Image (cartoon, rainbow, N blue to C red; front, side, top):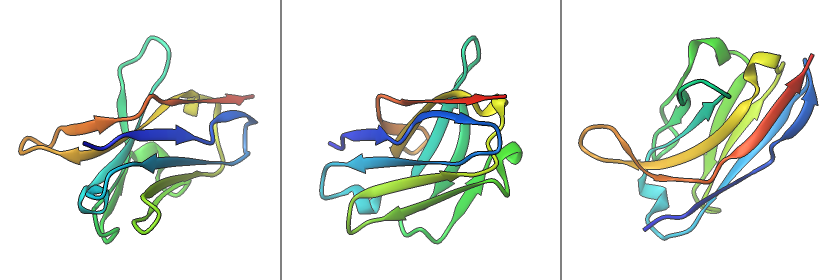
Length: 119
């Protein structure tokens, strides 16, 4: 079992930056792929960023490419999302996820952290 706890959300003006952190429990976390997702009010949850277990592979939602960076520190059992040049449309609850099954579905989810970008 892996438990995930996000932190680092908050209110920021457009153009600003935030760094989200996801703290994981469990010795097997370093073996899991991880990702960030977000859900805005009235919208479905969407993929934001992916990082492989080793950190050697990453992927991003097109609209955040060049602005967001996902990284991980397996020694600290943490995954990060550095968000720069934030836009009002980035406002959402951001969720950390880890471990995928054979269908690519994530097994473990955090409780989410709110990010609000004001114009």
